[in-house]
Amino acid sequence: MYMSIRAPVISTINEQGRDEMGANDLIVKYHSVDVRTRSRLIVYSNQKAVVRVQGQITGVFDAGAHDLQTPANPVSQFFSRLQYSGNLPWEIEVLFVSTARHEARSEGVSQTKELVAMRYQVAYFFTVSDPAKLVNSVQFGELKYTVDALAAFLSPIVDQSVSQVLNLVSLREVYANLHKITDAVAASLRSAMEEIGINLIACRIVRLEPEDDTMRRIVQYLALGVDTLQAVRARLAEVMASKSDPAATNMMLGVPYYPVNLIVGGSLPGLEQLIPRREEKKEQ
Image (cartoon, rainbow, N blue to C red; front, side, top):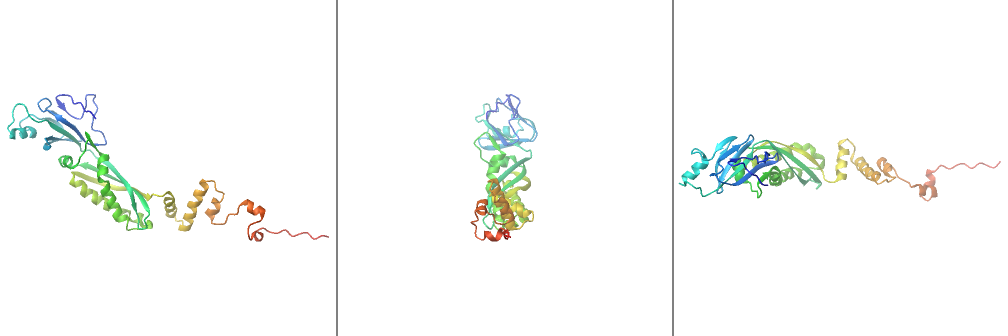
């Protein structure tokens, strides 16, 4: 990504008028800023700007226009403490941090007590409460740090929280314990996010179901009040019907299926007991 800044202004708006801070971006970095030529910093709403000099944070700026060369500015105070005057020896980098509300999702696979694979998806909503702590806590090689990158960072924590509860319950008890899974994930996420300057707003489980298609359909039948044996037969009948198997209906009803060729040939054992005999007319 190349962000061209309108000299002498530093902001996330490029020369084409497009905001480089997208909806999925948490941090947008502009490095190698020379305060001798670009000293006007503009921070837009739902943003904060973190100024870093040689890896050290010297100031955090709220929304508004800021002059980096004024004596009262933290950046100027930083250089004045070093007793530098005239040409400044270092360039600075500005990291724009989004303070808007964001949504991230983490997904994975865990297991129940019977070792049934369950696929889950967790959605969590958050805002950045401490931009300086976030900048110091995350690493990114590009010019942007996105919500997807944060979700990848938090996914192991989510997976551990889900597994702590899910591994101890049976398949029948999964949805009855859904609130316990949500509470465990929310507690772990809140603790981890606070350490990197993020405030968790809400957390919810948006998906929790068996990974196997057959097991998932059986669970759906069980939820309708169908007994286990009938649910298994219903799923097998569904699979057989998708393959145009004529015995699908018999599987659903739980009755034997006799192919036509066996009935016509009369080679099925006990067939004579099923086919009614016609009484021969007595010769008069």
